[in-house]
Length: 156
Image (cartoon, rainbow, N blue to C red):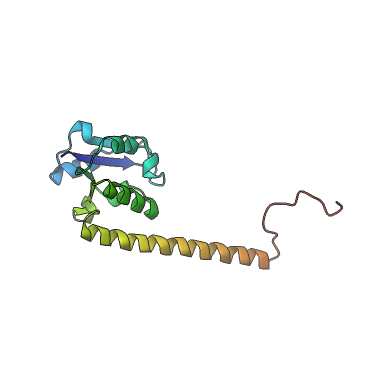
């Protein structure tokens, strides 16, 4: 079974060479046809929307492994990372992150780690909603009119 490697950098001034080197130094011999890299693409862009990641998804099969150097190479949005790993796991694909001690996120310990990540992501989402609601309430209390401007005038 093949081992796939994936790298990502946010700007065109950076390269994924060091990420690939990290994988090789960890003992993962990635064949050139199984190395995929998105260069100049932010981690905020969902993994499924990145060209190289999409191409890799089209090639990787059940019982194969995807290796990344760090979790943030998959994405910076916890929810997106969680969904990406779960979808790969459902397809029978292992996801290994070197930064996490070579942890397979689709194995038992990895699933626990993902559950904690999901809890943090949910808390993050809830805090964002709370801050937004507090900001809106503060603006309203300060006399600010919220929402879109009215299409009719007071004379109509």
